[in-house]
Image 1 (cartoon, helix red, strand yellow):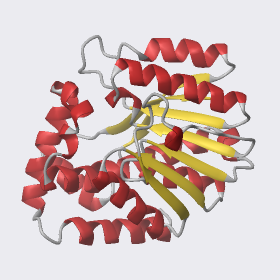
Image 2 (image 1 turned 90 degrees about the vertical axis):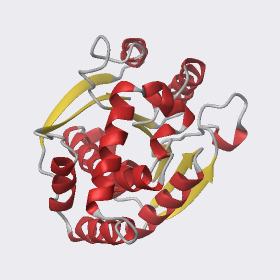
Image 3 (image 1 turned 180 degrees about the horizontal axis):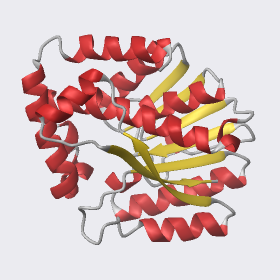
Amino acid sequence: MDSLTISWLDALERRHLADLTMSEVARALRALSSCYVERRARLAEGGALSSAGKRAAFALYYGPQHLLVTRKILMALPPATEQITEVLDLGCGTGAAGAAWALAAGTRSIRGFDRHPWAIAEASWTYRQFHLHSRVIQSNIAAPGNRRTAVTARRGTAVLAAYAANELAPDARARLLTSLLEAHAQGGRVLVVEPIARRLTRGLAPWWEGWQIAVERAGGSADEWRFPADLPPTQLALARAAGLDPRELTARSLFL
């Protein structure tokens, strides 16, 4: 792990354990995990970030996972990091996944978009930790007619939607897919990352198959990934305290 990422992890721990204990964050992580697995309807309502404990758990546990998984995917998709000049991080959350793409591509320019004010502040902080030149905008990435988040790409633009599409309502998700396909047509490179949620009904989110067909028709690829769960010590301790068993890190992706 590089020194910049280690420094970020140390700062992340200081930031989110300043007012909460590990036990409190672990309890919140159990509730957050339940929200993702059993009560996904609450995600569109902001249920994952509804308390200080959940926000800390999301940033401290899932943020590093998002960075590590996205980085590993990008390493396996060399075209994703070639000649990238800027990253658009749609539904940026903590900003970790977008930072992973910017760092892997060697660019310092990134723009993040999210509807939640806490996520905007957290992503801004994350981008600063990685010395990225950023602009973070509070706005719904899939709102109809929203000019603030219109995806305008060009050659050299990397457009990321990581761990965001599944939390949208169906009509908003459809608009996002249209925007991503248009960004690719404009010359941008597009990466969508989502978890593999085997415990969900039918194993996969019902919308994924339609997205995969659309991406493959546009010349893109769909992949499933399994990586060793080489989590940093704090994240591993949180997982164990919350009763989680991260034997491997999994994800699925669409790339154009």
